[in-house]
Amino acid sequence: MSKALKRTLTIFIILLIVGGLAYPKVKPLFSSNSDSSASTQNSGLLTVEAVELDYETIEDRIYSSGTVQANELVELSAEATGIVTEIYFDEGREVQTGDLLVKINDSELQAEKQRATFRLNLAEQREGRQKSLLERGGISQDDYDATLNEVNVLRAELRLIDAQIEKTEVRAPFSGVIGLKYISNGSYITPTTRIASLQEVDPVKIDFSVPERYIPRVNLNDEINFTVQGVDSSFVGEVYAIEPRVDTQTRTLQIRALSENRGQLLYPGAFANIVLILDEIDDAIMVPTIAIIPVLNGQKVYLVRDGVVEESTVQTGIRTSDKVQIIEGVSHGDVVLTTGLLQVRPGMEVEIIDLKKTSEI
Image (cartoon, rainbow, N blue to C red; front, side, top):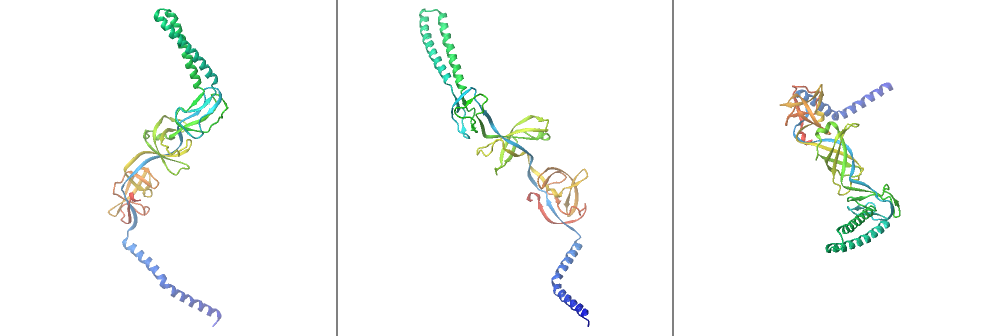
């Protein structure tokens, strides 16, 4: 026997041995596939998954972006011109309405006030004496009236000096937080000199805009939720003012909301991601997005009634990340297919292997 023939017989024998050893392990796979195929052929039904429509609570929302603004903001400045003699505030600290913040040199005005006070005191004493003389007929009425007029003029001059002294004082017009200062003791300032900013930061305003198509649906007291960068928590605000005109450049409507800021986590000027809640629907019927089939001039879903597929044209409403509201075309309790949408046809019988309520997914 040749060497080539011996080699061929050896290889054939090895293959027979390997095949014999592997057959018991491979046989169940073939039999399982055969049994499954036979079972499918025997049942003749397509297996599908579906959802049972249930009522859900949803919110109709608009997503926008805006800016956090101080409730009140002013750049402090002085009415008078002169040298700063005293600064009474600390940067970044809270102040109250009427607190004295900056004092300008008023020595000349104080001297004028003292002189006017002396003149007024003397005139008042003379007016008192002449009044007694007038009662006894010692002087004429004209003489007394002239003295009384002098007293009134001096009182007016004194009030004028007091008003000029007030202009040398910078006081807080409202309670808030002082920003960084831009002057020092000894600085020469004028009404155009920047002293510091004063902001009321609790509450804060949220300015944002929405497309003009939403104008009929936006109302005062609507609620907003918003977040800002650097803060993990979200905040709640309430719409309190709406611009009565549409911006002709952007075709948007400007809206302003108010939000509490007790922890002072919100800084004016911060960028805000805003969700405006237009409406809350308690009995919405929602279906998974994958169940909606687009068709010419509309959309449809496949229903299952008594194991038979039916087709229904639907009208959709609000969309979420994974569901769509159905306004018309289905009812509470209907069963809608979510798989097998390409294989089924109206009138076909199917077998549902997984059925869940929409409120549970």
